[in-house]
Image 1 (cartoon, rainbow, N blue to C red):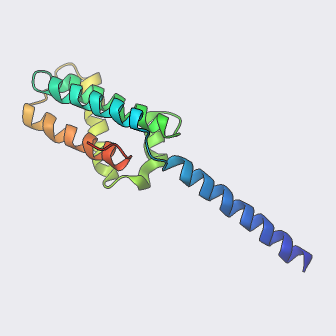
Image 2 (tube, rainbow, N blue to C red):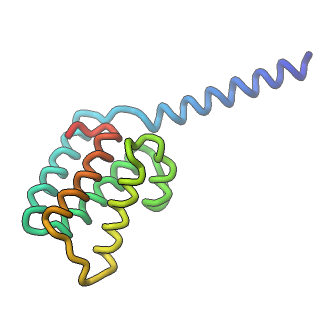
Amino acid sequence: MVDLIIYGFVGLALLVAILVFVKSKSKKLSAKDQQFYIVKWQEILDMSHNNPRHAILDADKLLDNLLSRKGYSGTFGEKLKQAGGIFTDINAVWSAHKVRNQIAHELDFNVSPDFGRSVLGKFKRALQDLGVKL
């Protein structure tokens, strides 16, 4: 009987810990944070017309920043793994990040305006999934 009570308390404590962890990751952005991400996103869009490569690099950095602000830690990849269930399409987020890596590591990787818009659309959806009202 005592064992059952102990297991019950341990289970309840574990449940509370999980709920606190999940709630901390899903908290809403403050108005100030919202404004920061909206302004940065607009700067990325403005830049994308003339320099889609740079815009994709900055969009990746913005998403990484938001993941950190939401409490995820580690490399960008580790943060994506931790937050995976939040995203509407985690494969699209990984795909966009892989394009970022190609841009960063391949000197002659070409980004057409249409392709750039497509990749930025994936980053936009990820930002929205994390609570940014774009």
